[in-house]
Length: 560
Figure (cartoon, rainbow, N blue to C red):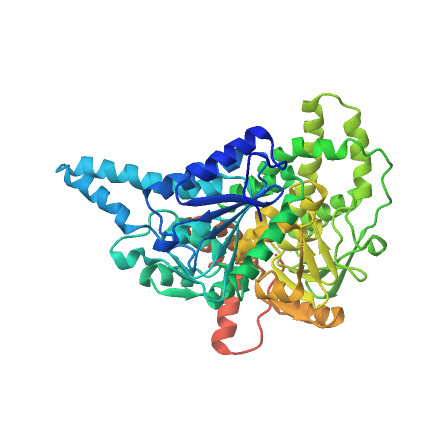
């Protein structure tokens, strides 16, 4: 590791000078570069356990704002010097605020003073989220109050076995107001745990932090953790900065919005970003494979990707087939549940790059960027609509995955409802490795499928493989089987059980789950109330309720 110096050959003179100044003028922060395009920002107030004082609040905001625009920074590792990551806000630094407040008797003026101060604190933490360079937070020892604010604004979080986290504000008579209450519920999968932590102020130890997704790796020592973090950062830094930064931008934009808004957003981004990648492709398209569709039992439909020679890579014809198939099944009264699988040894190897050759030729025929952009916009929209057809289909979809599930395969599986896999299955958000941000659904849906946002961002920024055990641990799948045959058998049995239930109830359940996920609870409650004002008058409700009450034969339901 070496500190930035005026003689470093890694950075341009202008940006080197900027970072060099930052290193010496940012109070209580150390800034250095352990490898090309990787910047290490270290909280440097170890005597006070890296508690954040007034100067550090200012430094943090200025530092991350500077790194956001610095082309010689592609990835940031954030750490705390000494034995603890961060002990929260430095209460000593608030003494001056108390003095300022005492100078005003008028409650409105004191309120304005406090509003301005809290806004500064909030903007400082939000500067991490506004910085489009991925931030890996490495945490050891105490991570308290404002320390939790900092880490939840980072993208990827690792910690040591001795690390512990505490939302301490409630213990000192206030609600946390600098970001924890806004970001922690999106970072941790369990909202019950979030509220317990925020209401009680209890400590969260490293094991529980890993279990519930606040971090996605735990290390024995700080040194081991930093080594891994720098290696991961170097891998990200070696990838296309356009792809990586657009990936972060899309993840943040999409998380609080319905999937379609996120899809529109990334499509607009990639209509420009993809032009350079595809312009040079001039070869003809490869042959296409169809889908196999059959009915293994009443009201259960099995859709199998059938391009095994190319590991079920999706070509232009299959994109079209998928959209048409699931649109048809959505309205088909003889279909109540769908099992989606891939023929052969792998589920899906992603988009068939051979099928993009024709697109490269089409792009080369237009010199005008607006016309190339419109061409790409239309093409990406077709891909997005094809995947979204699974989510629009109100029949529950069970995905069964074996072997490789890469790129568009992840898009497909995250648009399904239930996911099982085999022990040999592995998942990969590969787009960043080929110089683009994933734009067909993964960045919009994967953060809502997996409880750990730290893991989501690590996967999307690095393109690393996620093995079946880790997929089970973090909730991408909820069952793992030894063989594909065993998995399919269980999936068909589960599908048959669902198909035996009221199609009105099952389809309205899926509709409400999808509608409610991106909206406040009250909007979801209003939505399902409107649905059930009709559904509860249906023959299905009467039939099912009568069967349950009399414990007679299983109810049968007419087609829907």
